[in-house]
Amino acid sequence: MLITRRTAQKMSRSATTITNDSATIDIQGNAEINAERINNLNSKLTTTQVDEAPFHTQRLLVARTNAMYPASQCWGLGGRGDVFCIVHPEVYGKRQALLPVRTINQCFLGSCDDPVINYAWNDPMFDRFNVTPVGPPPAEPAVPYGVNSQGKPGGCNAYIGGAIATPECVAWRRNYAEWDRSYQASLDALSIPLNAYNAVVNEDIPKV
Image 1 (cartoon, one colour):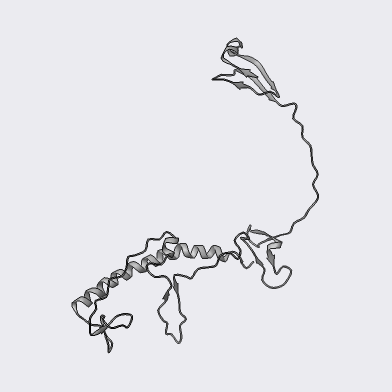
Image 2: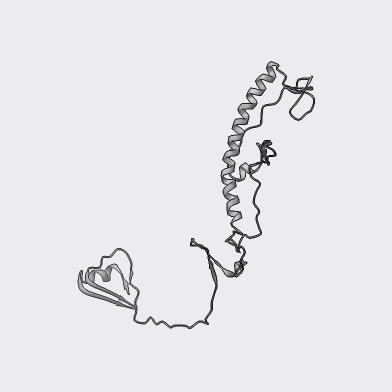
């Protein structure tokens, strides 16, 4: 049914019942339909029920949760040991957990070494997780009769041990301590998205 401006002028402005049976109403322009009842029918529509072959599937429901996994993605079922399931089959085996920001060393007889930092201040991991890194550390003064933090000649440590207390070395230690506080804060910020990523990766094979 095509309603143009000319045909619309010939139509009644109101009706008790308007019935459209299997037709398309194409109104070219603006129109307003006023009726007490509008029936928009499609009597020519037919439906057919199609029977499918029966099938069955087995799923594992994790106790005290709503998590459910296909049995084909799990192993250890029916035994007395732990059950493992592949939670993310689309990425299973394609990614690995990353090193933590800091590796805590084991203590021996109450003596513990300092944590090992796994990411330098300019490591690409900061860009990967959109974390703002710090700038480079302040340069250590090249004191000719000392050694630097890498044990090479020219630095603020005496060969026989101990700190060299020249004004340049005192200022450098103060600036380095401020830089290190900012560096540690950037590592703390990096650990948040990095730990969240590792948590998702570790879900690939959870213990059920």
